[in-house]
Image (cartoon, one colour):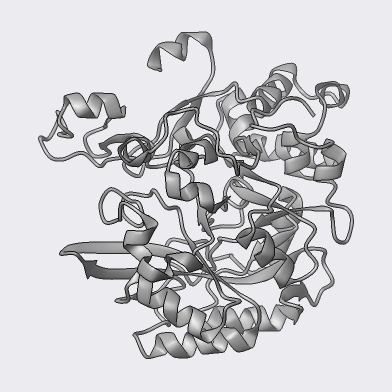
Length: 429
């Protein structure tokens, strides 16, 4: 495997990326996804489609997502059977699932409105029933796959732990301005401030697309937490599912997974370049204006177009809360791979739409030759790609993606970043 802009040496790529075994030594997992019962999701999100596209992507384990929604939970029980906390397709397909969901907590603390999203993992259907019974006392679950409750972070974690210590609570996309625990619009300045005495039961955080592990290492308290990455996908398409993922060591049961999270024994994470995220830079989408934290400071955080306060992005917020300088490496670091999805690369090379027929034709040819997307993005040698007749420009860009050599115009205020090619574009950075 060529150097992949990771912070520590990786092991042999064949050892890492072999997803053909029933229980691979390293397991690619995306545990934060949604069902078709969540807002703004694909109507075709089914267990069968998730299995199909997880295999194409190279994912071994998926979160079910949305276990709080009864209709989706019924489908989960119909399609999957639970054994030792792992859900196995009744169709015998080689993709496994973990019971997962996301909760939106909306409440007031210290005279400020708070909106925090949390990922939940659970070991079995019995525990799910207890979680849902508790939530029914607090509000409705039936209107959305990610329901909203007026419960504080501290109270919620306490209640979950009273049900079972095996429930895992992970702050989701922690820097997102509107719904992250550290978000600039409604978040907190520390996990302790958010979770109080229950902070001891928070073992990990999710980076979100707009941050990467090295950014999170700069926050002192996060050096004691496991840094995870998942996609928060609203569809099964391979440019969404698994765009961020965590590589675990061998997992045979739910306890294996939870132990790796709680003891920081994961192998690595897969990240998109944080500039690609929707909230990396500061700005105003409707004003078509974005800027770096340095420029925001010059502007006193005021938009020069409309005169209103800018939406402060992740990079700026990290700078505000950082205890350590840029480039600091945590003693508890894990390696990470910074890559864009394969559809994005094909679209970039040929200047064609992401889901165009030509993009799909090239993608399908690559998958047919090499097995799955992660194998292509992380492992397949340049010579092997060329030998199969793929365009030299495409092959070069796949390798450039692997080594972090693709430039991104940063995303801001709900707009994704944009990948670009060519030396003439460097002036944008």
